[in-house]
Length: 288
Image (cartoon, rainbow, N blue to C red; front, side, top):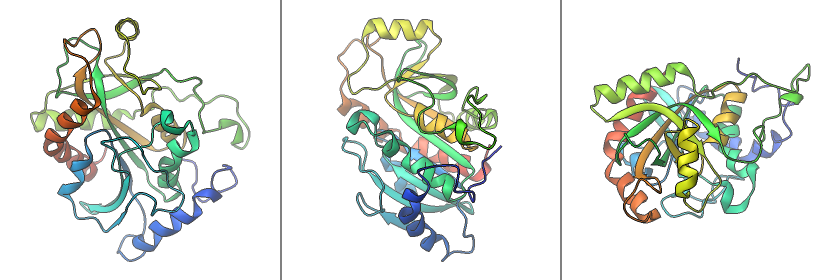
């Protein structure tokens, strides 16, 4: 059940989003539909996906009031408002990672903003290292569940602020089964190699050790990344329907014959932007 975004008494961060929300609402108000339908995050190297659309508006880094600015290569840090198949979609072209400045509010800023603007869908993408030896670079993992390797699980969403207060929330997997089914079917339709799986998300920025990869594989993970799990938990906690895709840009340490570099991750993501973009566009049109 989605928490009513009109009730701003629930969250201490609500008012801090007001300037950014106002900027986006000005553009939404100029179009027939004045509501936001979805929020899409484009992960490492996938920023070129945005080229398939003509934005209604674009905010370069630092232009959207209060929004975080990414400092990592392969994350342009721009924000775009689109219309895709009649849906209004806010896109974050690259994300802010917790390891960049240690500020969780910045990591969750855009997810919370999308919620405040009334979005119901949250689509998260990332570049990830393959942990399952059956995976190959260039494949997709449609996320069914996740393992958080961060300290703590509650992050910024506080179930104790609900009325009446609760100290726990039966969140289960943050990924909506409708999205799992839809994304899997679309990957098959578009002949994109993909499998369903579990994401392990850690702090970074260093790549994992071979021993860590082995431990995570035994715990049930198929892919590893340095992001996504916080946004997924936050989105699910706010009642958004969350979908997730990991693009396997490399095999994780111990499974790869070469040292891992961020530049290789970015390059492979750019080469796959066309097929991933087609999948995301169809997903946004059809929904979960």
